[in-house]
Length: 234
Image (cartoon, rainbow, N blue to C red; front, side, top):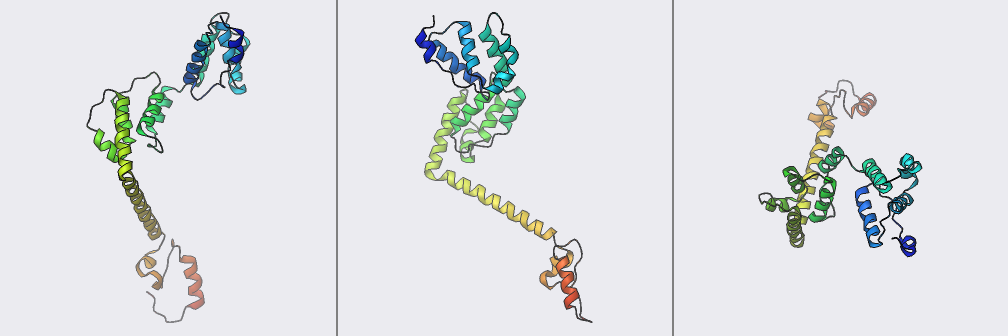
């Protein structure tokens, strides 16, 4: 039976539309701690925790709740409405952007959370390794781990050891250098492509210009103002 103290002291956090399953796990832990078992009581606690947008989406259930199993009904509705679909889960997994400021074990927690009720497979293992720095991945790629969390903890050890010895910084610097080289090549190619044949060959000594060329307008103005009869053109 719910006591008056229990009823007054319990205030659930506002419903988390981004992680409904986690929110309900938190709510049910509160119910157990306070020995709240009455179906109607649990239902109304959930309703009280909804923001206006979520409440409006669940309006039909709030206005006319079922006579029995109200809590199970609203839990099923909210979980179904806001939980990620399998397509969205897969898309998020394939669009991970590396470790960032996280450790490998934190990344693993995120990835396992995206799996929902689905079981990880060999592809999941590969996706995790692809997010790790090269020096970490190279030491784990050919090792078999049946426990994914053990894999992530081993990755933590290698990752932190690499940071301590500067290997992490070296890899980041190498990646930055490679990126700069690609940008320089791209910039050089782009610059060359914006010049006509004469300016590519003769540079500032060019005496002819044709479109398209970034110097064409300036060249024409200069030519009209400074050309000398009989001057040999290149």
